[in-house]
Length: 519
Image: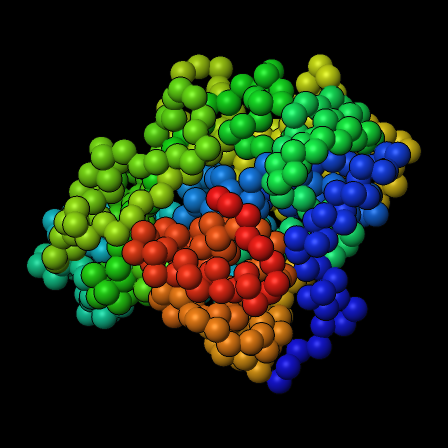
């Protein structure tokens, strides 16, 4: 079955080089817009969608590419808030569970799935550890029930036998194994894909999504922008300016005080962990609430993460893992493996910086709240900081609510985004009806038949098809080879995959009739 996309074909939401140029020209001639959003991560694109869907004339600018910063370096989990329960942050925990429910069941069933999280229990002391972890999972499952997520989608937690643990997690050390505890959470196929889907949905509602455009300066009502492709500048008048720049919020508003933390992940071959499709969840020694996870991912890879350490000093454009962090992650996960991972098994690493609000005291970053806040500068710029990927939609709703409260001339409409499906969304039970290869359905959902109809060409590494590459150029706003490899497909994570895919990426640009920008 080929889904019908009523009223909103891929063309309506497509981000292309031609659309970018056209909308930049229109912006230069505009007298005033309603909202300028600075920052093209998940928070920024969420705000653009929320505002545009309420009827505000919205422009988003991003000086690099969509999901260039923190939003592509997460664990790809859609958290239900269990960790926040452990630290007493009940409100954030419930908010997380609700937003997970919305993503899994309404807005992005095609980009999400249920992920089993298995805690192996080795003796001695396995009974007390299992009881403690099981209690935590039960509390998290209570949140799941409270927000209405069906058990058929996220099953209840429970103890599993030694044999079942080894069956679903064959890399676990059998010696001393007494069994395990299994819980469930949500997982994204890829965080950068979510960002692109939200951005395109916003574009479908009329928002201008302009990458490679830098905000040189901004106040609450004006901004000077520079097109990094042509070098041209444009002065913009807006009824509101919102900064959603994450750890770079201080660039537009020096009054914003953040304490970033770095979350690092390792990339290993899934075969090295026995081909497991579950998340091994390993307690960090000395902590009752922090774990290292193995996270099955695309391209036959598994991610192992994550750290939570202060990231002091200047903010880099791209964060990098440190050797002590790599050692910590390997050392922790190896405590439960039959064949411990070696440094040579690490194919790549990636790290992201969380924009945590600084506390009143010199708190450890792992203890700082993940709650978001809106901060108005003396110039009138509204910055949104803190928060996390799972709750991006709620963050966006709060930001647009604040904009509307400040300006009674803007339309006062409630946010509709709880019920707006992202591009490609299709009911989970019916995803198998879509007439396209399963690989494309997992990445594009209801749009997979459109992607599959694109012409053939050279494929890339890890089975990435020429159609996926050309779709990234023709529909998803990729302007350079790096856009395609680092964010639309994630082939750039492993250097060998990048090298084996560069020619195919260049060919995709040629088939789309677009000259790629220099990286």
